[in-house]
Image 1 (spheres, rainbow, N blue to C red):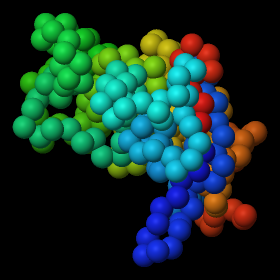
Image 2 (cartoon, helix red, strand yellow):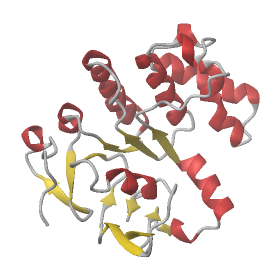
Image 3 (cartoon, rainbow, N blue to C red):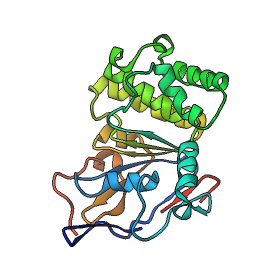
Length: 241
């Protein structure tokens, strides 16, 4: 997979020949120095952007060839997103924010509310259902964002620096939630992070190096932290890029 941008007549190559297969239920961390293309890679995997060349296959189907409307439906149904900033709708309660993806899928109000209540209870927010984002702590806001991402039980969960704005203890709690929800619900998890502790929890760790290429890290319990300078240079629900 290749991603290029053109700016002022100059071609900028962000991703060069990225090749990755994710197995169902797999947990993978992607680390690397800032500016090497990690977030761009995540956006393309999540179909928020398209590659310049190459393809993305999900369960054997090439999703990069879908129409925009079908792609949007696929994204809402199959992919969950957790970002560094929670992006909750400020005028809605925690419960209403988590219900939103289900309502977009035209799931009935009663079913959507039950699912949202269940997942909010699972992330420890059963007593905060009627609170708006401004009435929640940073950790609680990120728990709501995680619940919203998981309410439809997506096959693929993508997280971009999900604990980057949290203190260490709160971040560790969110890390554990990722592991627990993966184990309970079987979603494939890919997380982009600068946090070596979070990366070290993932069974598989990849480093994106300068030029937008991926390399496996073998002993990532010690090696997951990104370098200070850029380095030189399909199962049932499997994902290939």
